[in-house]
Structures are given as structure tokens and as C-alpha cells.
Image (cartoon, rainbow, N blue to C red; front, side, top):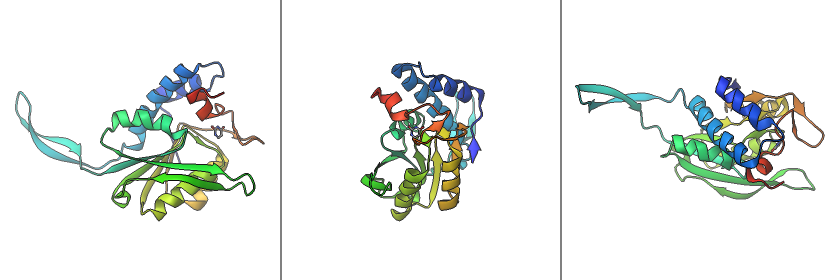
Length: 206
Ligand code: URA
């Protein structure tokens, strides 16, 4: 697990955690922080060079080596991270995984799954702001692997130790990048201290 401990990330996360932060401000902070996290999660992408001409001279200039990316949002809260990341990586392809929790079995059930057809050729960055129990994240990654994905990273804002342990157990090949590792989950499944329900806070549904 990698913690993105950049001062700007940590400052913005503190503002997002505060209970009185209004929806519009929360959303704006999420957009900003997602771009800083995108920087962190892509920092080791392979590079190549190509010849260009500056106004002064020719040069061999660094560019991404054409490695293809897919961003996959776990609905619905993942969309908050997705939007900011797409501003920074506009050519990335996008997928969505929708899951709900069956109240009888408490297991995640898929209600939507749409990813790029060539997902097996892409570096897949799965985004979900809160890694809580890890059940839905692990299930989403199972589905992505079944669809052919082989190179996957998981990006979140706040992680609980329980979720990090679950991911390490079920998907040890998937690196987790987070802005914070918090204390624990409470009886309602909320991350403590956390920031509450990320979806409700970004969409103003509570
Ligand atoms: N999902 C959330 O939105 N918040 C939590 O604290 C845990 C899961």
C-alpha cells in the first residue's frame, strides 16, 4: 500500500473530512485531490522520446510510451474521483462497475458492468473513494480479471485496515494507493474517523 502523503493532498482531505464542508466545496476538493492522486498513481508510467522542433532547436522530447490506460469507476462514489482524473488523462478509456449488497447474504451483487473491450491490453486503475470492508472492491477486481484485465491498480481516498487486508489477501497483485490509512471500521461499516458516506457527501443526497 502507498500513502500519498503530499501536503496538498493531506490538507484537502482534512477539509473534506470536516462535517460542515458544503457539498459544492466537497465536490471541488474531490476534483482537485483526484488530480493529485492521479499524479501519484501514474508516476512510474513508461516513457519514450520523439523528435520535436522547439522555436529554438530540434530535440528528442519525452512522451508517454503509448501505454494504454483504463479508468474503472465503482459506482456511484467512484465517479467523483473519475471526473478529476479524466481532466488530467483525457485519452484514458473508462469503465463502470455497479454493485449492490444483497441484504440476505451480505455479498456484493453486480448490476452493471461495462469496460473497454481491449481491457487486457490496458493498465487498469480502479477508483473508489472509500476502501472499507474491501468486499465490493475485491468483487469488482474479480470481475475485471474475468474480463481479461491483468494489470490493475486500486486508487482510493481513505482506506480502513480491514479493506487493505482484504485486498492483500484476495488480490495481492493489485497495488493500493490511498491518501490516508484510517483507524478502523465501526459497527455500521463506516471508516473511523473517515469522512462519512462519500457518495452522499459528493451528490448531496443526505
Ligand atoms: N463507504 C463510505 O462512503 N464511507 C465509509 O466510511 C465506508 C464506506
